[in-house]
Length: 155
Image (cartoon, rainbow, N blue to C red):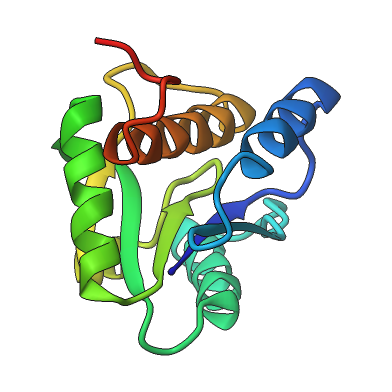
């Protein structure tokens, strides 16, 4: 199974890239994690609808057909870490690859967000984009560690 993280925005601070790289290399070969960063649409004199539609096209272009789509959304389902671990186990048993989508500064196109298989939220707080990437991969690693009885997660 592959976890594909699709994030709108190509630039992140060095600390965020270092943290991402550290967690990404910890995953076992049977659970590959890949990041696809897509370009943020330039904000100059464009409507909200045009911005998010352009970003949706870029997002959809990097998601392979048949992939389960999970969007990160402030109105999504709040999950405890153990619930995320169960969700990860269910995804793995389902056999489909999963794309987790992090929107850009203006969020995701509403129709795309609503059509996703699932909507989850990382936090009740508003997070900087780079922090959301790091928090997501850390929580996915923690979820894997719970399922694998790995000592990373201690209760």
